[in-house]
Picture (tube, rainbow, N blue to C red):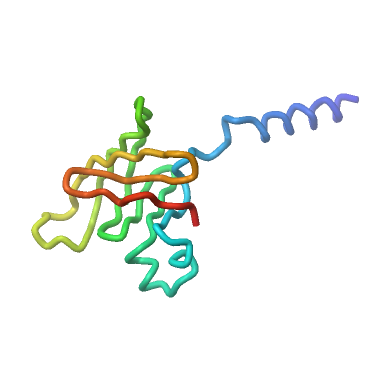
Amino acid sequence: MRRLVMTMAMSAFAGGPALAAAPYVGAWSSDRLNCSAAADVQRETVFTVDQAALSLPEFGCEHATFRKNPTGWVVRASQCYGSDPSLEEPFTRVIHIVRHGATLRFTWPGFDSGPLVRC
């Protein structure tokens, strides 16, 4: 009986919302065909977000912290490296993520990803 109670408690904990991934975590693209394209196409078109890092078409960031706000999430990304030769590396960027239903949008001053769908 004790084993059954322990198994049920562990199952309830493992299936709880605390372990659920944040809604922005995953791979995103403006076209699902890009998700299964060659690696060079994916590098240019797929946005990948995990719990602590970002990989975007123009740059990647080794560290990211996410804060919920009324319109979505504010991401403070650091240890970023990218294709813009005018930026001294590593650089830091504040990124806004907004989710509308099944789409996600990344924005920062001078950039708007447009609506992206999950890969």
